[in-house]
Image 1 (tube, chains in turn red, cyan):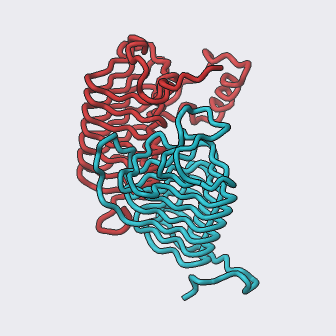
Image 2 (image 1 turned 45 degrees about the vertical axis):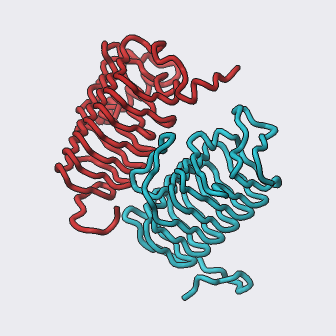
Image 3 (image 1 turned 135 degrees about the vertical axis):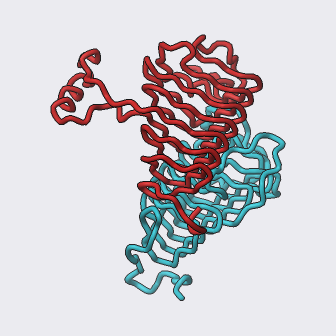
Amino acid sequence: MEIEIRDLTGEWDYATLPDSIRIGEDCYLEHRGSFERMRSLRNPGLLLGDRVQVYTWSAFSVEPDGVIEIGDDSTLAGAVFWCAGKVTIGKRVVLSYNVVIADSDFHPHDPELRRLDAIAVSPHGDRLRRPPSVVEPVVIEDDVVVGIGAIILKGVRIGAGASVCAGSVVTSDVPAGSTVAGNPARVVTQGGQR
Amino acid sequence: MTGSRALEHDWFPRPLPANAAIDEQNWLHSSYAFLHYRSTRPRGLRAGHDTGIYVETFFDLGPKGEVSIGNFCTLAGPIVSTNGRVAIGDYVLISREVVIADSFAAMPLAPGAEGQPSEEITIEDDVWIGTRAVILGGAHLGQGSIIGAGAVIDFEVPAWAVVAGNPARIVSWARPSHSDMEVEGER
């Protein structure tokens, strides 16, 4: 298979993306493959604001009902989105390398439903018979910085200007302007680890 | 060897940067590793002999970025993202999905961007770095230290210490049983 080098260097034709992906002015979309896991039937299913930068390691894995919105001037170094409902990213947000944002666990919690789900998602299973999963929107407000390898899970709202330290696992809301770290992520009151 | 040579096995159609000095007895997966390489230093990257730099390794260097890697190292796919200096010794093993970066929220620098000044990162001989660990500016990993998977390090780790967790702490020691290894980090 011939590798199209320009598909890896941001020089491909962004207009060839499906209609459900809306792109603002002066965006930089490095790797065409970042958009290959877009399965949303919503229109728009992915909205990128102006001057959004999406680097190689980013990926938008979006279920049929999923919608992702990214605000102006945000940078996605390596953010992988697993979206079944709604993920909203504000303006001037930085998502560093190896970040994961998921608005669902994508599987039910009840033990019997877990068994049914495992069968339905197996290679020869019927995915229409999957039991429903909990989906809770993720909101990352303006000017948030999400550090390397951080994981943001369902239902989380990260307040404007907050910092999420490298390697954090964020399972609950982060107050605006605060810094959180660790697993599970907690507010870091002073100094310490970045 | 220096200069703009191309790798014989390369699938990505670019020569290596002229200021990257990579020993010929060395394995480098592809010039794709330099997709975001903007170093203007005389030696932006130096990699010694018998060192393997494998698939998914990237050198996202800003204009002042400078990385040196010793001999007999294995880089199994880390991202090195810095506008400062990263010094890696000999016999160092670095696992997959590791990020070595000058800032906790590092990103590739756009062409022409100046970048911020940044703190040095030193990784001494015989260090192991587990998968998904994050090594940040100011980190100094002493000889033979072991960094557990997912640990986040921005401080000095003593020689032969085993550190793990987030926040990371010393959980054990891995000192050599024979004294014929240089134990320069012991204090």
